[in-house]
Length: 141
Image 1 (cartoon, rainbow, N blue to C red):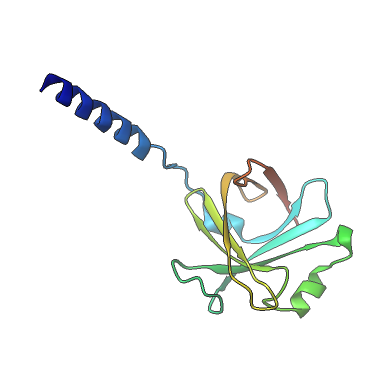
Image 2 (tube, rainbow, N blue to C red; image 1 turned 45 degrees about the horizontal axis):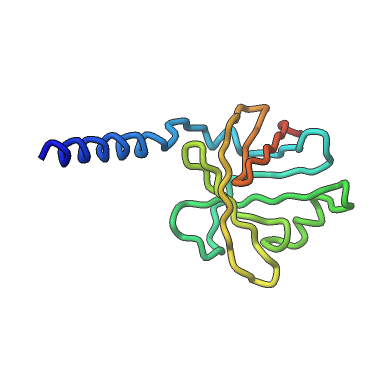
């Protein structure tokens, strides 16, 4: 009986620690909106306030965003000409979890990727992907 009680107590403690792993950090989505430049690169991302009504993702409220890399000869106007195609994604920010699903111009699957935001101010954006690769951006004009 005593062993059973100790076993149950250990399980309760482990379960309690596991439930504490969810981050209590929360960032303001309004700080995310706008145009960002990846540090030391000519790559940009723009998070808009436009709500998604096109993708198949319906588990939460998503907004539109898009990205381009001028180092590869792709400019913002090129991405805007192919609205909701390559370069476009939908996103949602929930606490410190930034979910992005990139759109494919061939109407491929909307597969979400989740990033952990570590810094989000009106001038700095830093997040980490599931491979522990860090991404760092500065607010652009």
